[in-house]
Amino acid sequence: MTTNGWPGDVLLAGIVLLGSSVQWLTGMGFALVAVPALVLLLGPVDGVVLANCAAGAISIVGLAGGWRRVRPGAMVPLCVAAACTVPAGAWMTRQLPEPALLLVMGGLVTAAVLLVMRGARVPALRGTKGAVAAGAVGGFMNSAAGVGGPPVSLYALNAGWTVREFVPNAQFYGVVVNAFSVAANGVPQLSGTRWTSAVTAMLVGGLIGRGLASHIPEQRARLLVLVLALAGGVTALGKGLWGL
Image 1 (cartoon, rainbow, N blue to C red):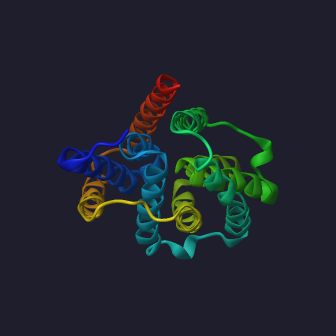
Image 2: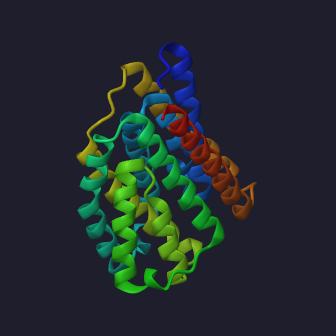
C-alpha cells in the first residue's frame, strides 16, 4: 500500500520524525518503530531501504562522540557475519509477493521485540561464536526487514554489557550493516519532495529526542519504543494476512 501526494509526505515525515526521536532518546529504536509503518506506506522494498538509509545516517552522527568505546574484538565477527547474510535478505525481498513480505517482516519485528522484552538469556550468544551468530541473524534481518538491532541487543545482554558500552558498539554495527544493506538493496525510489520530508523530519526528530533525553527516564523510554515496535509488527502481520 502506498499513499501519494501531500498526505503521504506528511505521514512519511511523521514516521521518520518519531523514529529519529526515539533513536536519539534511547540509543536504539528507529528501525523497530519506523519499519512497519514505512513498509505499509511505501511498500516492502522502499520502506526497508529508506529505514536502512536513515538508521545508518543516525548511527554515523551518534558514533562521532563514542567511537573510542567500540570493541573491535566483538564488532569484527559481528560485522563480517552480517556482511555474509545481507545478500540473502536482499534476495528474499525481491522474490516474495508483498503480502508474504509483510508477514515475514511483521513476524521478525514481533518476535525480536518479544525476545528483547523478555531479556532472553541464550548461552549460544556468548563469546566469538555468539557474535558471529548475532551478526549473521542481524544482517539477514536488516536487509530483509530493516530491523537488525535486536540480535545485537541480545548478544550485548548475554555478554553483560552496560548501556554505556552497548550504545557506541550498536551505532558502529548500525553504520556497517546499513551500508551493506543499502549496497545490496539499492537506494529507495522516492520523489524529491519525499526525500526532503524524510531528511527534515530526521533532523527535527534528532533535536526533539536530544531535548527529551534529560526529562524521560531511560527505562520508560525503552519500554515505549518496544511497545510501539510491537504494535507496528502486529499491524504488519495483520496486513499481510489480510492480503493473503
